[in-house]
Image (cartoon, rainbow, N blue to C red; front, side, top):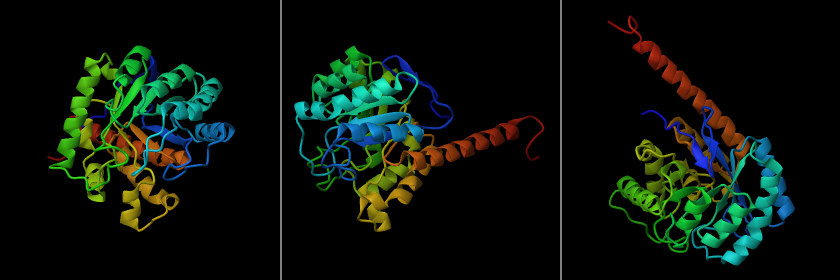
Amino acid sequence: MMRNTDPILLRGRPLVCDGGPFIFGVLNVTPDSFSDGGRYLDPDDAVAAGCRMAEDGVDVIDVGGESTRPGSDPVSAEEQISRTREVIAALARRFGREGPAISIDTRLAPVARAAVEAGAVLINDVSALRDDVEMASVVAESGAGVVLMHMLGTPATMQENPVYDDVIGDVKAFLTKRVAAAVRRGIKRERIVVDPGIGFGKTTAHNLAILADLWEFRELGLPVMVGPSRKRFIGEVLSLPNATDRLAGTLGAVALCARAGIECIRVHDVGAARQVAELCAAVRRAGHACDELRAEPGRGSG
């Protein structure tokens, strides 16, 4: 299957693919995120972390002011804005249009609106526009891009015995419906990215099934984002209870994503993921070149 090569438009700004996937860097300005909670509560520390990501080749810096780890509690819009707005504004001023884009990881319309005003060009909504009825209007009116992610339940309940008839089919059907709902609300398809939601209301077996069949989600005809970074399923497979010990497993998942042609990969360890993704992209290009040579008249067996 050919990769979706259409540019992702974020407030009219195309993120043009140069042959490899877009790397999204996770920047949590929270006290309780599952992997890096508390590290970047100080805005200066958060901005410095974003600058390091830029040096490592990040394409999008995804700033979040609310943990959505399993069992987490909601954070008010006011608190999320307090945590994220200054960081987003500082990063947007530093990088401008030529550097990494800035996204906001939130389910709440007021947070998204404040982030866009501060310079964010993408809204990463783990609820796929379900948790705040005004979110679709913010996306449509601002011209921002949006990530629509699958999640079973809420962050507080999503890991309480998640069950599917067919995890791939069920997630695809959900994303198809949410894309249609977004378009009905005035969001253009070319601004939409879909995310099957690794780790959000899924067992280890469900997550592995998604990684095994990533091509299924590319059939939706939209850019796909996958966020496997340091997730619990990696720890369960590799017997690594500490999230910060899961780099090698994360990079294995990154390789699977890149080899499958996934357009966007969300990670904590940007530099290492960038290298793996670029190598896999080179392998894909070499494979396509070999296929074209074999297809030339006079070549091949026979």
